[in-house]
Image 1 (cartoon, one colour):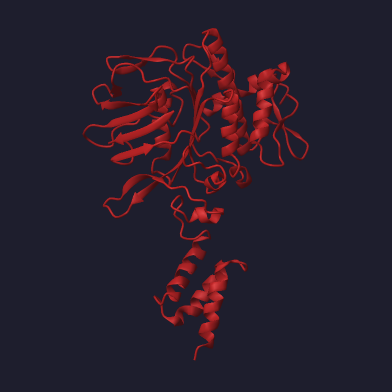
Image 2 (cartoon, one colour):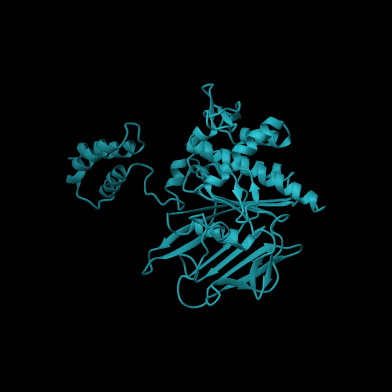
Length: 429
């Protein structure tokens, strides 16, 4: 498991340190502060590859570079057999590469990385390997399997023409016709990831037209129709892609391990950017635990499963409240230190506190809103509070009351406090 990251002169901050938890790690923060960057660094630390270096068709997952002059280092640590093992890589400006001590780090197990644009990367200890030459990491087998969004669905080919993956459309149809273990896994994964009451189930295979001879998978929708997966909504397509890639990754790892006459890995690390992307709120609030359960079950109840996920949704941390274990889980927040000029990006591991509802998460350090309301309502309430504290003259009350009535709902809890103030003001001599 990845347990430690220490970045110096690379990324949005002069320095970042993260002591990761062994099971669930949640990263929050505003756009542009480094959530995706941290996932890229985690992927590189585990695999020693950059996704866009493996697949030039990607527009994300580029190699990290120094943020300014001077040494730039990435320090990372794995759980070893008996203790934490640390490695340090420094950016060699002449070689334009990250270099380190000779020899590869410890085997991190199966590493999966779901990027927010639909790209997907896989590092398989049975099929991917690297060695070091002159302190520079080079591939001995294929460095990783990196899919752009289209290749997830239509298949992945190597530059030499080798077929690395058939893709969701072909494999799903083949698995469904065979009716074997792979399709049974896929059905189980889809059922587990489905929102309550709307189970995702494969429908019959169909043809899309006279000139397309492919058998296309379908999804049985709640209203009774079998919709081709290519016509499904963005949220459903993302869940279908994740489900397929989880099954495919584990199945291919298991087959490769058998060919090498070695046991399958007992470690799985899943990196996922914007875990809630495209999903309805009721789906967002139940996505974390099913993913954890699925990774554990696919890996035959792996001894170690770690998830590192970035999110913009308050429903994600709210959904973690019943299962959060401070011994195994952690919440990291990226924020700006405005007391410095220019403001500095800060990564903090914050205490995870049960807040009870989503609105409380919106106004927490994770999302930094003053009010879980519209911007106009927030401004009206802030003025009303200033008036209640005596920071505005009482003759502003009528104007602020009108602003509140124009922006707040009839059942808003702020009315209790404001109505009491207005009644006392009107009754004053």
